[in-house]
Image 1 (tube, protein in one colour):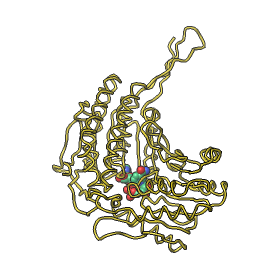
Image 2 (image 1 turned 90 degrees about the vertical axis):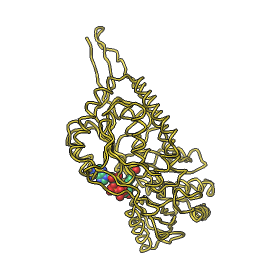
Image 3 (image 1 turned 60 degrees about the horizontal axis):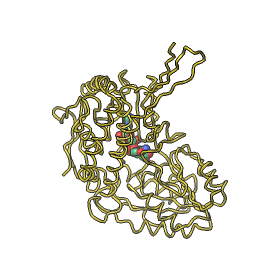
Length: 475
Ligand code: NAD
């Protein structure tokens, strides 16, 4: 029911023979699903060589033909949705309907990039003299190294893979070792769609060793990483040594501002559902709730009701609305956050502890009365914990919302058009949802500012990230 875990290098599937390996666990049970082979140094060198050769073939393929392969991969993924979603839920824990939605969203991103690749337009700039023709062209960057985390096991890899392939680049993907099966299934769709060998390669291993080897190679011209801020800074440093382009999608700590004129119940329903999606292990998850005094009590009551009604369980069981956390590290992190909040006068309104005696379950949690300098208000929780606090004025809440070094996502709810415009302008964030949580679509740029990183995935920007501008002045 799970999948055969392999490396994919130079168009070939490679098993564990003679390689080191690690166990992949089901976070709902703690039981072993399969053994994951690690790439050796020789495997990584082979992947680099294959990607270099693959790039020569792929960049010479027309954008029209590249799009056909990408669209075919998207169609195959859609046909395989049920299977891929089952693999994802087993290794990551999210409820099956969430996995299914992720797989469909992944196929949509491939389709979008397939089409955008055909629109990698340049421009002609009028010259200063009659005999000069000035051309601005977009060219593929070259070989890309992509590093993706475990919280969205197909959606995050595909932003890198589809963007790179649509632009005419080749890519070596190191997907998360905790959720490798989904990445294997994704890559299989490209293989079965007829992607030439070497254009896409999939490796696993000790993350620090693999990233150092790949980023340190002259073959790699661009890196794209999604993960935590500390690791992002490390990889950005490695990229800088080789003056390589980089896209960094790092953590956040998204403020939610609920103004007194918003409908507290409707807002609580919308934002609570978004908060507990994927057990809060989402980089754009709403994580700090500032509610204006007049609607605070009603918002809190409804939000808490929502949290209490969540059904925790194995994501493959019918009726489960929240699965386990992806690994034991997250459980420890949740306990540290809750203990810190309690020691600073925070009140646990619901939840606050581990759940059950197997797997990595943590109760949907609501905390109130926490000071702004507590752990939960300053460090990305990446879990099902929601701190809800009061605010008085617009200026007060803007200052508190913007006070952290992160700037990935932010949300605000109001019925006033004037307040909506003002808060959209005031929040320091790469993405802002005003009366909306729809901030991640294939068609729109996705990325942060401040320590949340740089560059965008998605939208036309997600393609441009894999191209260089070349200016030709032709006399
Ligand atoms: P971590 O910092 O150990 O790892 C984060 C990701 O980076 C993982 O996928 C890991 O495999 C990878 N990684 C770690 N060291 C690496 C290296 N030297 N080279 C290449 N890749 C490396 O954190 P974690 O315990 O897995 O997750 C906890 C934190 O990570 C969360 O609190 C959250 O802030 C962040 N995170 C963010 C995202 C996101 O979507 N932005 C996703 C997952 C985790």
